[in-house]
Length: 420
Image (cartoon, rainbow, N blue to C red):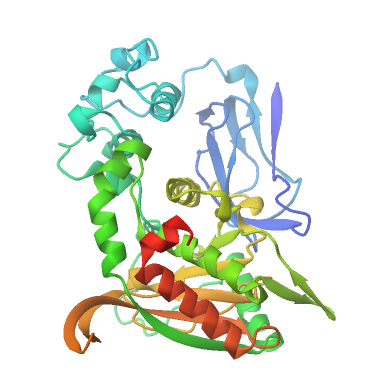
């Protein structure tokens, strides 16, 4: 029985998209929830998955503009039991197929609930996973690192586990997804052209619109990061062992932003017509640069989350960004945005607002430099901070007070965490 592969509804305002590529080839035997194609709209790039198993027939080739609801392929469910036309991913030698098939009958009694769920969902053998916790305990980050290595290994047995697995699996900030290798220009070619993606076109429109419709201004300050860095170093191992995720800088900044928004509520507002709308919740957007363009996934109700909760939320959204499984709901409704140009080495910038938010915080690279402390010149790890804001709504006093509150919180993180 043939089942249509249709372009799904992505959002109320989206009526069409661009079929970037088919991730499953024509004639392949697919299973339910297998990725079929990559769809790009003016707001999001996402994977479209199979609703059922069977043999795939491609009706619309990659590179075409498609409408929401359009049939672009079919899946013959009667062929679901046939031998697959694409070879299944081999299991690395470190984890034989027999062991995988035996799970979850494998011993998972000593695992935390989060780790046990991951092991059972992916059919893993805990004995094949190297634990980095105390006494060799398996952490959530160990499982994620194991899955990542198994996927990257392909037909080659998994490499020796010499790198730090938790750091690789649970980043302190949103990572930049690896770009696909692009062919270089032909020798002697002086120029080349390619169409802008829909996401890039929409981003360009939004940035120009922000500049045109707001009175954007930026204020700057700097913060000594030595106490935050010392606190992370002191408690990192216990934090990872307890929560299965690494303690990064971003959770400190999210906490500081929430505290500053509470102290200066004018920043947590926006203009709508002739009214000022003040938000009383704290959904914080984190700007992410990807090969497809800029996206801003949102950490919901950040004021209610612990440091671990923030880091886990960021890690989850980072995974969705890498796997192209972000939904519009993940990208909408930020009251304030944080962007970190420091991961690329930026020392100073003026970030552009992300509507409907009226302000945005720019983080930058941490650099050791001489500063005056109590009349003495000392070397400290310093970071430049920038807050861009809509001057129609937020006056200089409020903007400077807001940024100074963030600086004070990060200069004395114990006070921030104690909420005093």
